[in-house]
Length: 147
Image (cartoon, rainbow, N blue to C red; front, top):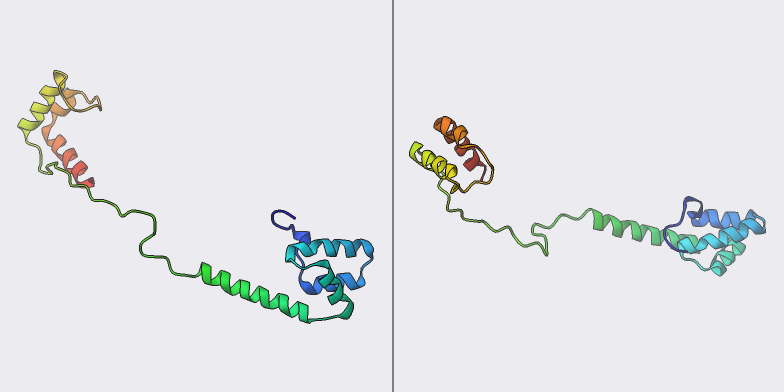
């Protein structure tokens, strides 16, 4: 069998033994074929059903309990403080002044944009920046505070 068993293939050991004892041949073949999902050879299922042995059932229950405790331990562990394989963030030191730009610097930037020497690619017209140096200072401060 490949992949996960479907809902019809999931039985407890008790259901397998009971179905095997009380069923006709068609159901017995189905019960034996579903044993692959719980990893028991059909011979063990047949023997347990014929003698009514509960030892096999207890072994399966013990295995289920061990599996449940190991899964619970895996899922309920605390998260590591430092994740392996992920490098720590590096801090970039920027050489940008966070002082308010003066009116002279704004006018110089506008002049450079007009003659095509401005550094910006945002295509903001020079008239907008030049119209209000005070507003440009406010925008500058809010942009620098986000860095």
